[in-house]
Length: 348
Ligand code: SF4
Ligand code: SF4
Image (cartoon, rainbow, N blue to C red; front, side):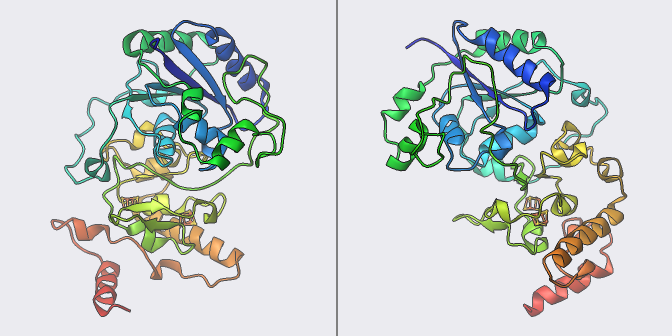
């Protein structure tokens, strides 16, 4: 089998002509290039877990380069939540947000969820299409990665002839209808101008960065909409993503590790910018526009707003607020933490 690396182009959500042009330039330049397989999908974040786009991505088993309109960290963990896993591939490309701060302290030593997981050795390189306006820097980086890390991949048809469920196969062969009744329309590779008329509707849900998450469960306590759950090994997961309230990023403000990402939020720290990577350089006032205590109040206010919108009572700071100081023996605990612990002990 020839050595190949797969390049995935995740389309923008809008029909912005500049975005379309960049996507088309990339696909046009890469199609037919030796050792590179190109796949075009709708916006990664909008893909549903059992849709054809995700099925396509799950069929790629080798190294992969993902180009999309979102921060690399957001792209990586959006893939991860859909069982598309791999090591973070290091890229030489980047934008202003990726400049490293040599003075940043090393990450605090903590058990992270990622430490408990087996991770495949293949690499996933995520590149943000907002870094550059033209295709050349991306093409140069893709060729560099392909030369360095070209990997055997199982092509999609090999996967299809493997053991997909009948309904998955049907959806792959007939994606136009969404349920298998439409005209066959291969998802990849793309060799025609890109249009996104069949783009899925926009979604809004939290994505957990497990390289930061400590499984502290603050988010599950805080969210009153049943979005979070736990898996068989009692690890936090986003169980009901589409129950999240559109536009609300409240729980990202209360996560002690800044592990919760809303890739479409306008604030970079919430959308997964590198500023929040590593658990160290967390200046909440910079990331969220409010000091830490204010960020709790902001989160509570945002949650109340959503509760009221669905006809429920506001709860303010009285329910599910983080008990961060429980993990900081050297620091003073606040009154609210004490009250919360007493309530926990009463099991009410
Ligand atoms: S609050 Fe943050 S660190 Fe804690 S379980 Fe949720 S995502 Fe993980
Ligand atoms: S943003 Fe609000 S509704 Fe969505 S998961 Fe977080 S707390 Fe729950």
